[in-house]
Image (cartoon, rainbow, N blue to C red; front, side, top):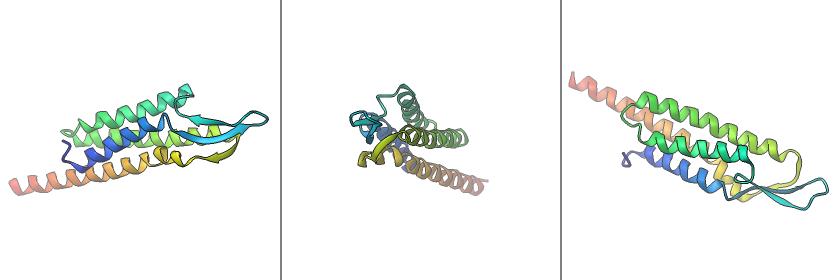
Length: 135
């Protein structure tokens, strides 16, 4: 299971999602307020969404026996991670400041998921070609 490259990409996506909870995404202030940091652990919606992205990434590692189901779950996770990024940017609209360098933890999750989808598709293709040879 861990010898497959998509398992590594999925594990990295889960780790980065968990790490992003404590790292600031944005540093700035709301009109007249002192400067603050936007973190995933401070907002309940961001917290739940990030935990869902991490959990789905981790659980999909163990679905290697059913590649069709695994690919659909990772696609769902990809959509959720893009939605997570959109929510982060919607939260920062009302703030004045700048995006933190630690935002990379959130922004790289969809890239890892795309690499995992590519790896799963390659596995499907390899199994299909081996099945043809057996027949």
